[in-house]
Length: 152
Image (cartoon, rainbow, N blue to C red; front, side, top):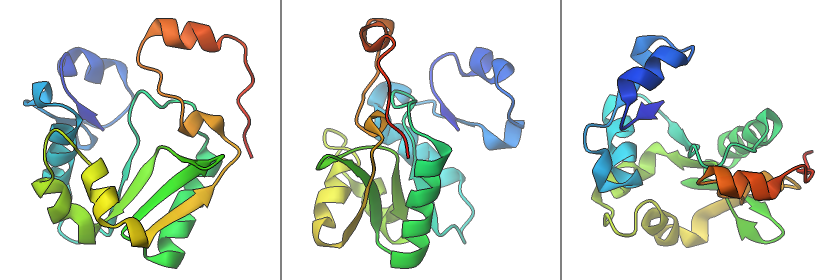
C-alpha cells in the first residue's frame, strides 16, 4: 500500500505490517508519483503490479481474482476490467511495463502506458460497475446511496 499525506496517522489505523506500507514523500506530484514509489519498493523478481486506486473501493475479490487469472494466462503487459465497454480499475501492469511507467509523462500518468500497449491490453469483461465508479469524495459516495452494485 502506498500512502501520501498523513501516512503516519493512516498507517496506525490499518492492519498491515510496516514493511507492506510505502510512503510516497512526493505525493503532491500526483498518482504517478505513488506508482513510482511502489515500483521502487518491489523486489527485482516481481512479475507484475496490481494498481487499485483508493477512489475505486467498490470492486470485489472475485474481480481481482479474475484479473490475476487473466494476467497469468495471457501474460499481457496490461490487464484491465471492462464494464459495458468502459475500462476501469484495478489494472495489472506486467514487469515489462515498469520502465514505461517510470518514464511516463506526469500529466498523463499510467494511461500513457495503457495507450502505448493498446494492441496488447487484455480486457476482462465484468458486471461490476464499481470498477468504473470514481468515488473521490463523500458527496459522490452519498449520491450512490443504496444503489446496488452488480457483482459476479
